[in-house]
Length: 552
View 1 (cartoon, rainbow, N blue to C red):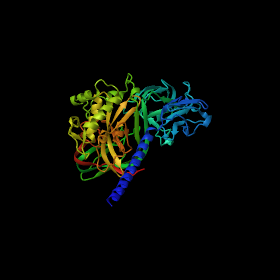
View 2: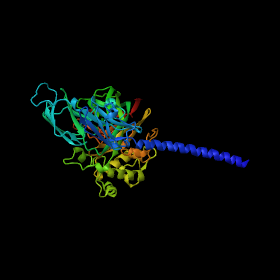
View 3: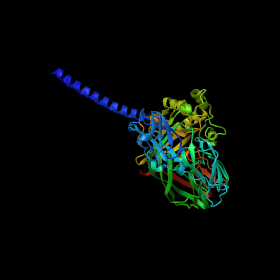
View 4: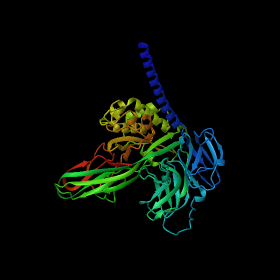
């Protein structure tokens, strides 16, 4: 009977091996199919007429069309409209009735990223210089009709206002693949990154913001918005995709108690709010128990508690909603160009040392020289820094403990996500790559864990995310890492990262001689949180962690 048992056991082993092979084969097929997903690199022309010819350049289109198709503003050209189709180029005639909108290539392997096409007949007429009717901003001309992310554009016209105030310049936004209904959404030039170089009533000089896409450019002020002019994003050394939108409902409070006061006093609270960025959008206040001062600086709500009385407890509560998109960036390093002169202001700002990032330390400089000797390409330098961090830096398994000096991580110490973010930022800046630490939370289900990550800048492509702590195998209690392949955290980020500060914001004191309270390694990297003045001797403050009230 023994041979019979062995025969059955052998059949069971063979069946198990066959099942495993099928599973691995299926996983390999999924991965292969993902790599064969079509990618659009350029559209020529980006502005055209109905019935004209459009040339789509990219890859993974397939050697022949088969069941593949173009989609232009949701409409596919007829069969006879395709003039040629190969793996890297599609040439097609535009429909006679075509609207402005997103262009995608669809094959059996999936849908491509989107490029924006504008029907020339839909372009608004440029207002004449002599036209003076109305007070809304009027754009008469642009210094260039195309520029890369970070490029300089001069806008000429009228009614812009002698000073900017709350006015802003808006570009079209790189809409996520899954949200074509947001194709007309806009992204503002970043004031925090020095995006506004000058502003007068008849001329504005701005830098093209991160996340901008080809489409309408608008000047918006208190008296209204200008008619849009078409602007094209040019010379992108890669593809950046925003997708997998998640909407969060979040809340937060500060409680002040054990007050001892003997007369008039003020306690100012710098309460951080979620930041707006190309991937974190539609940040909206839902409710608050106290209105902030109108003079509050960007990035925080400056709340004034006046004449606190001994024994009383004051609570400041805020609730927000916001949308977070995952980010995936495919970089073509050979297409990255030198940053032109004059460089954007953010280059000098985010390559210099600051109060958190000692990028001028001998340790950071020595390590930068080790990984980047002779290299100037920012992507390759960032990849070298990433490879070193993943191979040599040790994440603390609890995600909570870190060295007193984050740069001790460079010498082999263990570190939490804060140490990883600061050390990586220092290493990148020491290598000449603009970089900044980002602080906030990882949100999973109904809980949030404090966390830190990094962004670095590539001219022409914008800010590129990376999470070295998660990439090196770090974990946080209660948080399930959604990327099973952690190498995706280099030039990519999931939609569980909620940011409260980018960089290390510094704020001026409210009153001379005020007593300032600083909180370190919390979810915003700002330099102050509280300032007291007047006849207040003591108080105790409690800053809550982030509360998650809904995920949609």
